[in-house]
Image (cartoon, rainbow, N blue to C red):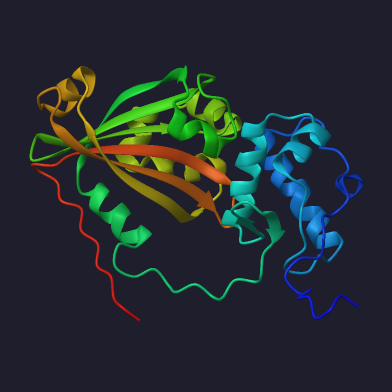
Length: 265
């Protein structure tokens, strides 16, 4: 007995030998790693509070990069399977409470707003993947990936530009498609990805930041270089938690307003 010491919160690290190896040929790697960790947690019926190996231990055991490990842990966090505690490590998470239904600012409302705008395809090619898309996709910054870029206009005035990147398998399919005609029928990039993969996007992880227009973006959005813009990055996931698309939409702040409504419980 340990003199009244509290013994509920942590159950000690799970042995690395329990985690096995990654299946051959799975891509992206971070997704395969997340699935493997989830499989072990489920198979061993690990309770909330069970401590998992460190990032460094997982990287060495599976022979992957730290970026891949962090992408996998972020994926598991999104699934509600783990908790990451600053300075203490990674633990099996407690079951999540039911989440509320989509309200103001729901996925359907975001999609409806974008459908009402004219859309023009500007790019469908392989480009180096930027920082903001690399980590959610479990890839390294600068690796080539399928890049779609569209501009949206309202009454002939451009107000938004979207850059989207995809998991390799989806990118290969998109590269072979007549996207101009597909976007006329399905004006949202994520809807095109849904159509081609047969998977449905059910959740969005969204972040917002203020940026200044580069010369290239200024030309597309008809603003001056250096003008303030709003950039919204969205990671679109399926019901299983898989990433379907990572997109960044850049908005003109003089013709577009982003409104959120929040209520205090």
